[in-house]
Image 1: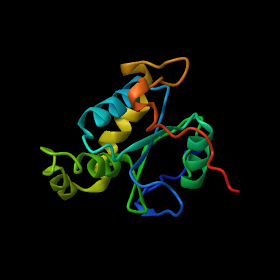
Image 2: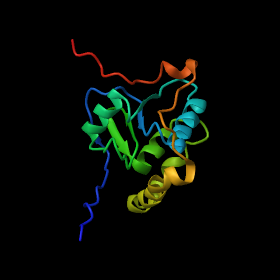
Image 3: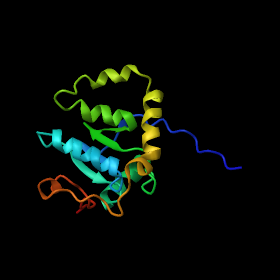
Image 4: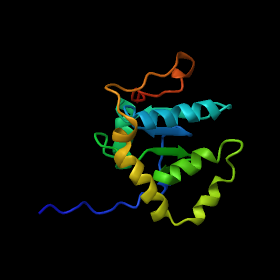
Length: 154
């Protein structure tokens, strides 16, 4: 009988040398790509950048963060040098937008319960929302905000 992997807590933690306001997402997931479109539509200051886990940069970042690039169980957002995961990432992104400043009140709900809800969606995202054969292609006006290549280290 195979034992289940131990539960990760996915607590926010410091990360260095990563662009601020960067969202790592599953680029073939229709729900995740919809989340990116949602953020783009509300990000009037163009703060957020995006990297699909399937890109060279996204794969490198997912490795740094301990996310399985072949089967990501969480997205991540890096804000002010802190990596946030699961429902924490949703809260951190939404609190940046007008009309969503109330969202941190959800922190009154225990993290395990919020992440349980997040996990239900994450585990069923392909079945419920669909999956693309290749990563989403951003509109040309937004493409500059997508980081896909590994940064040069010269």
